[in-house]
Image (tube, rainbow, N blue to C red; front, side, top):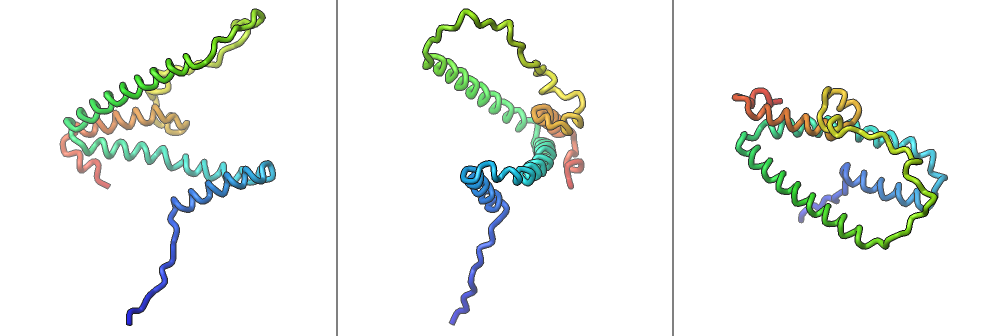
Length: 168
């Protein structure tokens, strides 16, 4: 006779996170402002997630792009550029079609756009090209960190005997 051992369901981290997300949304919907003391716990959790994600993105991009050959890098870059152009075309087409779906509104004569101060404009150059990658890491400037990591990974992929540099 076989001995049957009961199997115990042991949820993983993903299960706990998704369960917490659903319970948090339900709690917020049903109890509203009574849950405001729980905001501190949520802020700590999100801060801890953000603290680990950006270094993980940086290291995984540098190490994985550093391991592939220059030829594979060129093929991947070509594929990424084609995919990016396709997505841009879809986005521009969607914006043009959506603008046609709204009715024309007559604007008031009393309104002047010169009264409104526009928001402070950020330079795209400063957003994407980091002058100091550590400053970008410290301030969660994700585009600058990703671009720096991609450049570093591609630079490492051209080094002979790079396996020694990339090993743990």
